[in-house]
Length: 209
Image: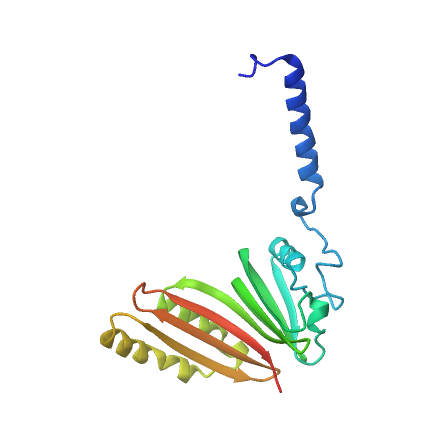
């Protein structure tokens, strides 16, 4: 196939392929279980929320964050003292959020928004689904209710509310929220878009006090 090329050019091509292969094999992102560097992992073992830290989350598959008491200053997490940082992950990841002596776990996280104020992580919003059927989004919320202390009766009331909304509206959006406070305030929010028929689901963690 490459017989028309001079031998010297073929040698250069082969050498280039070998070099590229070695470079990929030795690169950090090609390692099976890479270890985060200082600019990717915080001193408490959590994730840095800088670009480098979020690159590591994409490879590791786990976002680790502490909010509230015992949390590191925002500037030690790779954020500015007053900054809003958003990111979309290359694949769904697991979020492990610590607050005081509690640990919360959220799977299938597609995106996040971290907000820092006065050098404190004041809000962490996780995007769990950007184009979900309503029933699927509500099912996810029901599955997380015990963990977060959400009221099942409040969640159950949404079905009647969404029926009323779809009957009375041909466009616009309907928002449903449920919230509970323990070691952190955790809020689940569903936004149903009437035109597309899809629902977005976000889960927000905020420090208490």
